[in-house]
Length: 136
Image 1: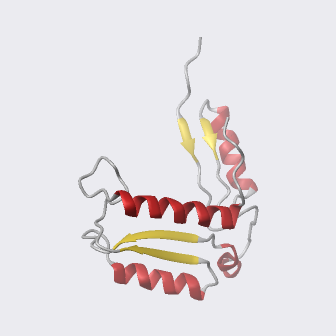
Image 2: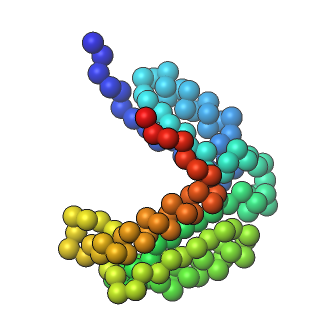
C-alpha cells in the first residue's frame, strides 16, 4: 500500500495562473508530488507588466495596534500604494493588541479581537468570493 505523497503549493507570479504554471504543476505531479495551484486572480491572466496592476487581488490585513514586529507606517504606505493601483485593500486595526493576538496558544491572544478578525475575514471573503460551499 502506498502512503501519501509530498505536497507542493505552487503559486503563480503576477501574470496569473497561466498555462506555464499549470504545466509546471503537471510535471511535478508526474514526478509523484501532490500539487495544488490556487488561482489568486480569479481566472485572469495578463501578458504585460502594465496589465499586472489590473489583476491585483483584494487584500485584507489585520493589524495589532501594539505590534512590536511590524511597522504600521510601512503597512499604511503599502495600503495607499495598493489603493492607488485600484486594489480593494483594507487594513483593520485592533486597539491594544499585540502581534500574536489571533493565536490562542500565545500569551498575547485576545479572544475578542480574534473573534472580530474572524468576522471581518468572513465578511471580506464572502464579499469577494461569495458564500462557500458546505464542507463535507
